[in-house]
Every structure is written in structure tokens, then in C-alpha cells.
Length: 269
Image 1 (cartoon, rainbow, N blue to C red):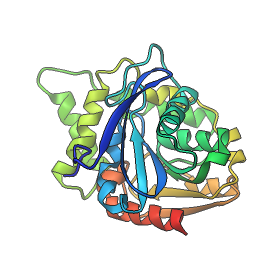
Image 2 (image 1 turned 135 degrees about the vertical axis):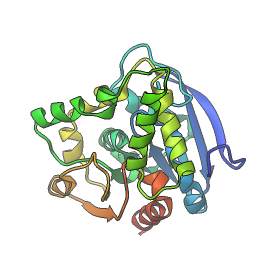
Image 3 (image 1 turned 120 degrees about the vertical axis):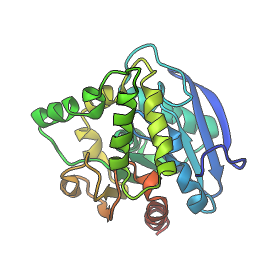
Image 4 (image 1 turned 90 degrees about the vertical axis):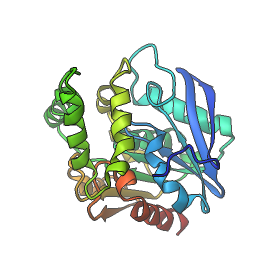
């Protein structure tokens, strides 16, 4: 299975606002910033590389407290994670790019476009839901697997339970294709903060209403964490939506070819 250990992928660190940030970049053409979801890492987009590197300069990074980036000194939220993304773009000298974010990463993507609209060509919001009430948001947070998961134990039951969940998250994938996101999740247990809580508390309404550039909404049919996405079409003026058949919560691992085709068709048209 492809990972970012491929020799063509350039990797490095920058001094970010909350410690060192690990990033990787590969390819040529228009810059495309890829923002992973909470409790994951930039490795989430490794399987897109062969399909997109000839059309885009792909840029991904690990949020603070994720992957190979430093742990922050306090629990961060969308504003701080956004600062880190912008720091990577500044360091690489990217003046204009498109941006794709998945799940929690979609919130960062919309916030970058909100704060620096002149810098963003197009936005892809993947796996993000439509409007929820405050009560629904609280219920969603309290039922997240990271909230209800078992404590680690010596007989490995918690690890096996996580593996079984990830089989459901990435339907139709081979075992080796599930391994990378599974390991990412296990590594997140070693970090001091869980990004889900800081991210889910962010009020995204101002950012959504400010989006004037073209926006593509993507949802996998088997992504159990997404609901009412179609309602966002009424909020974001210049938006369209694509549903990926059999795409799960980790669609870029499980459906890389289909995802890459959608990305290229939207940004290049």
C-alpha cells in the first residue's frame, strides 16, 4: 500500500505557532492543500498521490498534536489549527491554492477560505454535515467512538474493538488498506488532547455564509458521521454536491481513484 515514504515525496518541518509542524509535498501544478480529520494525520491522503501528482502540487501537514507534529501546550480549536495550516502555506510560499478538508479538516478548510478568500481558488468540503441544533451537536460529541471507546487493556480487547470499527469505516477495503488509518488512531491515544472536542465546539456559521468561491461538498454513502449535507447547498451560494457510492468515513483510503477523479474534475473545470 502506498505511503508518504515514497521517495518522490518531500517531507519537512516548520516552526509553527504551536510547535514544529510536519508536512509533506509532492507533484507539480496548482497547489492543493489537503487537511486531514481529527485523530488522523497527513498520511490520510497518501493514496491520492499517484492519481493527482501530475496535476497538482499536493501539500499535506499534521495538525499540532497529530502525526509527527509537536504536541501543543493546551487544547486547540479551529482557530489555532487554521493558524498552523496558514503557516505551512506561508513557509512554502504558496500565494494561491485550492483546499480540501475531510470531516474536522473541512472546518479548517472553510475557515481558511473565510479568513483569506483572496488566497483560495476552490474549496472541497468532504464528510461535513448540514446544520445541527446545539442539542444534536452535544449528542453527537458524546457518542463519538473516542468518547465511548474502552480503556487500553493487556488482553488487547480495546485494540481489537478499534480494528473492528475501522473495518466498518472503510467498507470493501483490503486489510492492508485499513492498517494505516487504524495505526493513526492508535497513535492518537498517546497524545495529550483529543482534537474532536476543540473542533466540534467551533461556530462555523459565519465562515459558511462568507464563502463566495466555488465549493464542492462530498459525502460517501457509507460515511456514518455525515447527515443533512444537502442542506448546506442552501447556505453556501456557489456550491455543488457529489455523493461517492460506497465511500466511508475514511474515503481517501478506501476510494482514492474515485475521490481523485472528483477532485480533478471540480478544480480543473
